[in-house]
Length: 309
Image 1 (cartoon, rainbow, N blue to C red):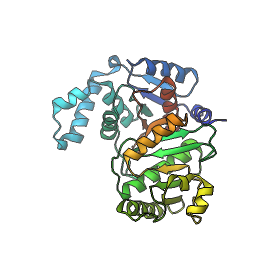
Image 2: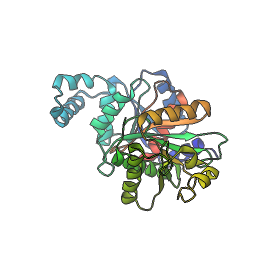
Image 3: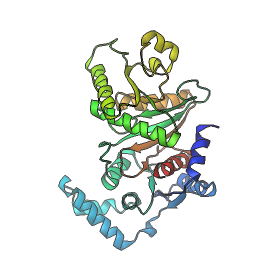
Image 4: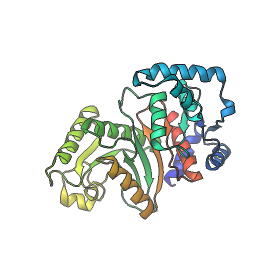
C-alpha cells in the first residue's frame, strides 16, 4: 500500500472538519467534493456569505488587541478580515473547525502570517516552520521512498536552536501522520568535519540541542545527503553514524537548500510532494503551492485531518 493510500485511510478513522477558505478557486471546490465523497474529512468550503457580522467584529477586535503592539492599525485589521482567510484562521484558533488548508490563491508569506498571528505558536515547539511529505516511486531509500523534508518554506536562515526545533516538529509529524520511526539527518555539504566551517559547526550544535530536547530520537549531523540516505556511502564516509545511511527525515541547513531540494526531487524524481505542512502551530494548518493540483489539496486536507485527530 502506497503512502498516499495509507494517509487517506488514516484520515477516515476519525472525521475532522477542515476549513477551505478559497471558495473561489475551482481546484479547491473540486477538492472539497472529493474529500467529502471519499470520507476523508468534513470539508467546509467557506464563503464570504458565511461570515457572521458580529463574529467578524469580535475577531477584528481580538486580532487588533493581540497585535496592536506591531503598529497595526484598526483599519489595517478590518482590511485583513475582508478576506475569508483570516476569518477561517480565527475559527481554527477558536476550535470551531479542526484545521485550515489554504494557499492555492495566497502566497506562503500571506498564509504564514495568517496562521501564526491567528492560530498562534505552540509553546512546546516555540517556532513555526514547514515540511513536505515526499514519496519517491521506486526508491529504496528512506522508508521505501518516503521522506519528510524541512524546512522548505518559512525560516530563511535558521540558527542551531531553530534547526533543532524543526527536527523535533518533523519527528512528531512523521510518527503521528506516517506511523514512521523518525531517523533524522541534519544535512550539509560536509560529513562530520570533512569541512570545518561555521555552517557545519551550526549543524553540530543543532544536533547537540536536539539530543538534549529528545535524547531518544535517532539523529545525526552534519551529513552530506548521500551519507544520510545511502547505507553503502555511510559505511565509507561515516561508519559510526547512528542513522547509518537510513535517514527518512531530512533537515536542510537553510530555506534555499530546502526549497531547491524538494522541487528537484519532485520534478526529476517524479515524487509526490504533500505540503507545505506548517509545524509548530497551536492547531494544524497546511499551506498549498499556488501551482497545486486538485489532488494536492485533497492530500493536504487528509494530513491536516490526521494531525487534528
